[in-house]
Length: 177
Image (cartoon, rainbow, N blue to C red):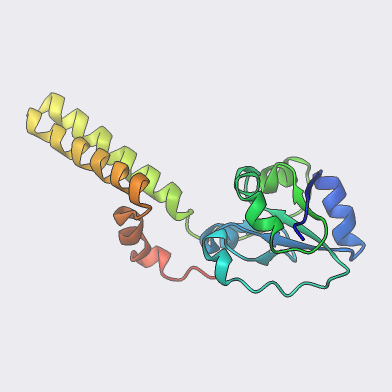
């Protein structure tokens, strides 16, 4: 039997959590969860979903969340398949929770999420390549082309070499979920 996913507002989720009637499952990656999450949320990254073992009280409401609600919406069939009966999603994700003024556990010392680091690094390299190509020699446009090719490859294959390199950096080694 496949569950149906129903949207709940941040306030509705908060009330269910406070009453002890619900379990919140955060499907974001460990680096995102480490930076900020809703107190008591279980971390079960969507990337490892097939291997995840949900230990949830069958009488509790299961509520899924991500950062903005886009991942939960995009994976609703996969999420619903893991729950018997109805399940719920936090409408608008963690962003909506914060906007509603509800508390989060935040670790400002945690590094930025890997994908944000990739965006910053790739954008900077493309900009540097263009500026140097205009100011020094057109050969520098090759740097922008190389980064663009890498991003295209990452999008097609799902493998991002820049993300793998950034994960090896000292500031990213101590990510604790």
